[in-house]
Length: 382
Image 1 (spheres, rainbow, N blue to C red):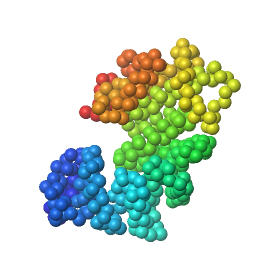
Image 2: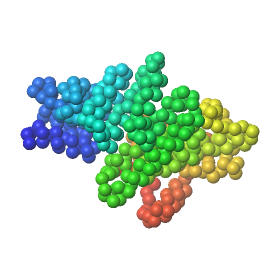
Image 3: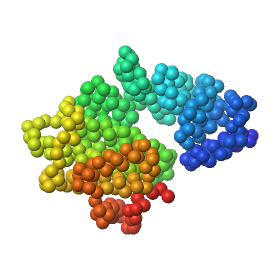
Image 4: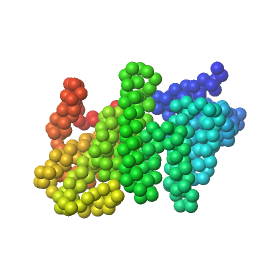
């Protein structure tokens, strides 16, 4: 193995351990050579690009990804993953073309016999194209037809059991104002996500193939699905999804926020029904309720919502605690913390530490865990 090959291998190991800065340190001796002798070294270009991406340096990763794709058009040297990454980063029609090249490369490699990994890559590529058509290219005349065609292909290739495809289909149906179909799609998505989660858990317990990384990769699509379910009034399913997320990451700030927000919306819906007993909120008119829920006053002394309000305060109080150990300069974290604070003000304020400790210990007893808890360190990865 040459020096450069050994360097790339070590950098990849550092990236696998989520240590992008160490990967960049390992690669640094070859940085200048990217402009000269190693300007067309696909593996080095890819590894540098991946390290920059993991380190949040998109402006440095983008040109290296572009060069890697140009130097390995058919993906025979470094695989086709770089096409999917570049396509998502680039967006627009250029992104569509790059993603299509990646899909074609995987299909060519597979021939007539696609394995599960190849199916996953192709489906991911098709769904990334759908996302671009629904965002960057949404004003194009063919945007809707292209999205329909791509999601149909993804559904066919995945044999109708991909939760990501169902979730994307639900988003398309919302944009088309076909709300009942959107609800059905999100329910299907959760069904298949739940099955996948259980399969991964069994595989992990049996040490049979799946990795913890497979488990963690469920987080983002589940968070997205939970938000869509809240939007469509699927509150019970949203709570199930949040519970699944906390199984994977017990101190996930956004999960606690979404749990609190779901209970908050349940309390709002209950108050709305109390004052409008003849109203029938359905998938077809839930968006009208969503536009005006802030106008619905909460009567915190109303017994019909007291338990739900308590659950909302509990989840949001934990979110506030977890947020105290997060980087508040991060834009997403900041917005979650501000949203948490605003909701708690309307709900009667956060619960005290004694109540939170009691709830935390109660969860542990359910799991037969007698560990002691330090609320100040919830969410502190260190």
